[in-house]
Amino acid sequence: MRTLAFILLASFGVVAAAFPCAAQSDATTGPQSVTVAKQAAPERLAPPQAQASSPPIQVLTTKPTSVPVSPPRHEAYAPPAQPYAPPQPQPPASYPGQPVEQQGSFTTAERLMDWITNYRKHPNPSSVPAAVHAMEDFGLLRDEEKAWFCTGFIAGVLGSNPKDGPALIPRMFPLPDKEQAVIIRAIVYSGRPDWRELLEKNSARMPLRRPLIDDFLQGKRPTLMELPLVDGGTPGIYALWGYYVATGQHEPVVRIMQALQWSRNKDDHSFSLKKIFSGWGGDSSAVDKITTGGTAKWTLASYAERDRDLLNLYRSEAERQPEAIAKPLKDVIAAAEAFESETIRKDQFGAIEDAQKQQMSNEAGMSKGATAGSIAIATGCVAATALGQPEIAIPCVIGGALYTGAVKLSH
Image (cartoon, rainbow, N blue to C red; front, side):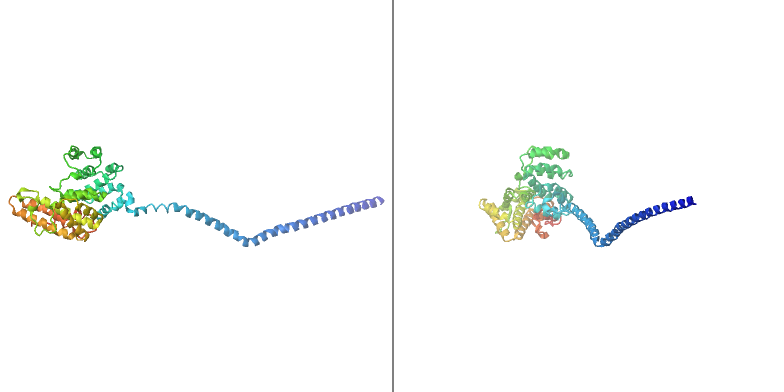
């Protein structure tokens, strides 16, 4: 019994000893779990607070949206390099300064002629080859009167550009064999000291025109300032005006004045061929002379109406030229000052008509058909203003071909 009691007491002691330990462990774990709960609670509440505070912070979400907005601005600034490239097509607006655009600007013969007329104000030699091809396209180089004017213009460009002129010539090709004569004459008429070398250098491009090239190289054909104005001098006048339009030089104009001696004067009530030569049969070139004289007088007056600087040249030359030239030149000055070149046209038309009548009545003169051709050409030039195109600075060239086939005074 004693043993049993002893065992029971011992077991109770063990249990008692174990209970406080369990209590202590519960006490320690309890506060620890509480502290953990207290620490965990803020951790769990923090996210809600962060979420609760995130709506105002959504300003940050708008900032990200503003951040992508700035890149588009940078992308908008990158294209300006391309939007600002198109301004390069705008310089073509400065018509005479852009050769590439110039080539596309010659859409009509009128635009081409307007460009030629204003060339001196806005010189652009690099566009001249394109203009030459336009001349061919519009048939100007196939018409004798227009071709001579174009020849003089091209010659003036080559002559007034000593450095760049030679490089322009190859760009004027290809041209039909017949029209290549324009380039050959333009090189010769340019007055360049190296025209012979240029002609020979470009001869390979014109193999069928070797005879004409050799004639110039051998001195068998005259240069521009040597062109005779007596026999068929009207083409020479066209070429001289073309050279002046390209350069503004006075020498070609003074050369044209020499033909005034065969024109009708203002105070001539009747125009007699005896004033120019003795006996109709003794001078078969009478009609050509009157044609040339009338063409010279009318174009001098007509050009001066548009180019007032010419009047100063006319006045100075009227003081130094012989009476046969000074007298009709004063008529030109008076008509140009009053813008009455139409009066000159009518006078010269009448002179040509008188010449035709005398030619027809003279048995020793030319045939009626030959005279009709000469008179038609003269009428074409002198009556060109009837076309109503005063804005074109080359009325003789524009009107000539149109009237040549239409007007036959012999009928």
